[in-house]
Image (tube, rainbow, N blue to C red; front, side):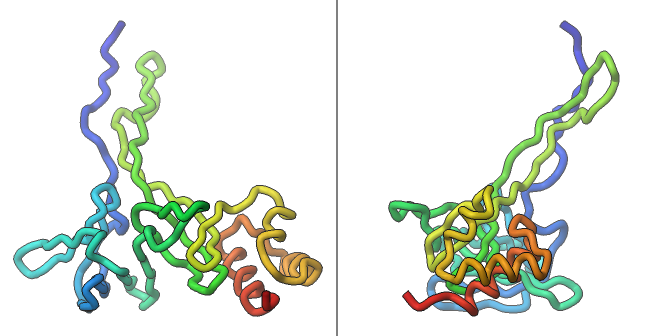
Length: 198
């Protein structure tokens, strides 16, 4: 057995943003606080707020939602995943980004992990440090219920109360792929506009 020179340091970050971002946040108490420098620690589920001389933290249990703004004025809306439920009313955990907030919508759930070093001493190749990574999982929503995105087209079509031929024609005509985020948002807009009244 030989030593392989791997570092005990872990690179990367468990923060949602690479740097502080201007944002607003809304508490469960009904209070809202705007125009603050914020970042979100996905590992410990804490919203960090950078003040002039200190950093305050807000636990996820006290948050209703928060919005981050990039330099171009675009916003990203985040909410507690516990607002959404799997089958048998089991709530999700962590923080979710809301990409489409209509009845038939789309969210991303964020989770943390550590990617192990891949260094091979014999070849002197690969990364020597473990790395913090943030994983993203996409979920379809129907009201507050969440569903994984199906692998097959027919299973995807069967989730929605719209004319299946219209939906298929819309997807083909616009060359959309329901596994691509931007295309899926367009498909969901179509579904929400054309849903049948049940």
